[in-house]
Length: 423
Image 1 (cartoon, rainbow, N blue to C red):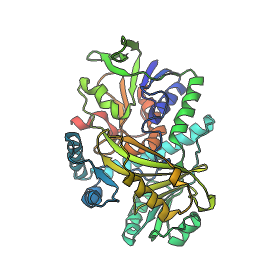
Image 2: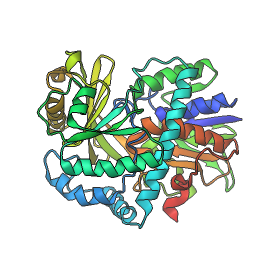
Image 3: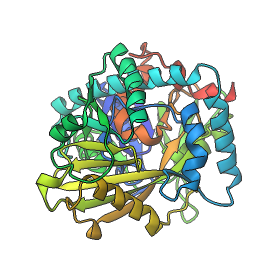
Image 4: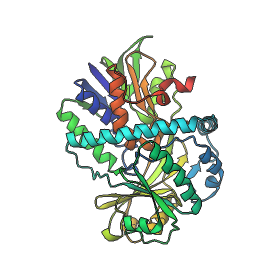
């Protein structure tokens, strides 16, 4: 079949790889000038297979107001909030308080994370890619005794699902991360021993090149105006802008992996996709003292900042902000990220010359991504991965390729079904 994939972020590119591997002719349409240049460009760098969890959490709801009021709090919202922000928050509250839903969704996302790790390992054996990729684990620090108690419950769940983990004492944390010499409070950590790292943009571009060498066509700077079809099938897509005559591209099947742009493409087909652009920030800096830098990924629970070693660079990422598509980067957000790094890995990287970034994670109000068949026979969705697109990309690409080929997917996809927001 000839299959069009809309979107060349990490999810779209891994989807293209999975489909071409199965023998399909694949065309990828991307509005930007290259792969991995939007949400995938400078994210946290962690492939946190064991840390995935739903956005709509009762615990998150209880902590939301204090975080909003704290100047260093991880959750922020533009004031006055927009109608879209309020609608997203309302939906989040509804899902967070739905009895039993959080637990079911968390298990589903963890199972997808397990599958994604296996798919990444296979992919990296099949294709030689340079993206500062490692699987050296992740440490989730505990800044309080209460955090360690929470991690004990998390560890039990991880053990139930067969996910390798360890509860570490402060001494064991410093043994695992000898460069962590900062004064930040430390009561221990939960170690995810098989989690990974890597530069998502570099990965996306390297895999896109590998796909192109295998016959996948990438069309960059191509804006999808809309999908064209009838009540049963999609026949093609319309590409172009106001300055040129639209082009009509036909294919046998279509996979939408367009992140925050996905709802606009599917609205006319009656599918409600309440994907919100949750804003995040990052700093990427050269490491100036390797002995003082993180060995892998460290999640500072005090500032809610993730620090990741990417070769000779350090990337620090933080904040969950509801501000629409506002691309401004307030200096106070970066200052908080710098404070977090200084509290754990002082003098490790040249943060004064760091490259700053902001981007929009395509978040669903309940948390799981949207994976499955859409409202037409040959229309499929693999989108809405929120903060876990890099982590879940290889696994979700594998299962959507199975769905496209009419196979029973490797995982139960009930939690990810596209039509759940209209039920």
